[in-house]
Length: 370
Image 1 (tube, one colour):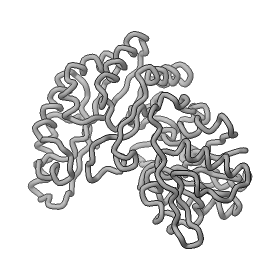
Image 2 (image 1 turned 90 degrees about the horizontal axis):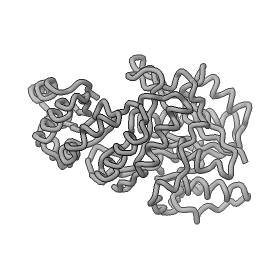
Image 3 (image 1 turned 60 degrees about the vertical axis):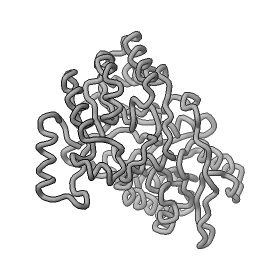
Image 4 (image 1 turned 45 degrees about the horizontal axis):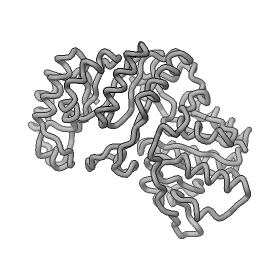
């Protein structure tokens, strides 16, 4: 059975003319293709995005579409794509996944009647079981964990599915399902031959603003150092990628894995450049590893500092100190690695003077603001 995995067309910001393969579809496609014929449609890199997307759906009239919405800012594009699919192919079954549909499944189903089912949380096994049942002609999916749908006007959720404990059991991400030669695939700030990778899932902190930690149930799980380097090597040798954003929420959560990763990169002489995300306190914990990360190819570290005011950090349950942020920025800069930080302005209680303090806090250290 042929299954379409879709990322809706999105408008790319004029100042950031870059896009990367959907981080949910990459592992999902790899897991499903052992038993299904997988076709990926990435609407954003189509030459005439919405027009081409409509033509593909009208021509193919797929039996089933899995559509991914990786962020809340993309939900309207996702819903519009679902409406378009149903308009040109009314019999197509649409299954949505990703952070927004998964975190508010009932609201999403009621807001977009064109969505038939939602995979809540980790998608590989749930969607695989759904497809197997669908292929057999089954109509009752109530025994498949991790599925949400409407039965008449009644909202049904079949219950949480256990997380995949060992990410090394998953196959290599299915980059071959994407047209990696498409010039639209790049990280805008890094230019050609750049892309994003993800080597872990989740974070065990409970910051109030973050959907990722809820989506992954406040758990961290990571691929082994061997698998991480394998992926870098594949992307460099097969697709010519040399610069990477590592999208792990907490790259160095596991210190031993970080050490093994650096050792493996250096041992195998995988010459690529990459930047990572982490917390200031974890960088301070692993400060002796920063030179090793640099030797392995790390040229930039993005820290989730969030705010320059301790009261705000406490309000958002960051479990961090402003002093740690300053010390970590100094440490990274001392090691001649570019400093990047995610920061928020406009928190309730922020004053005009407090916002000016942001610049005094950040200017001496930061090369990039996000």
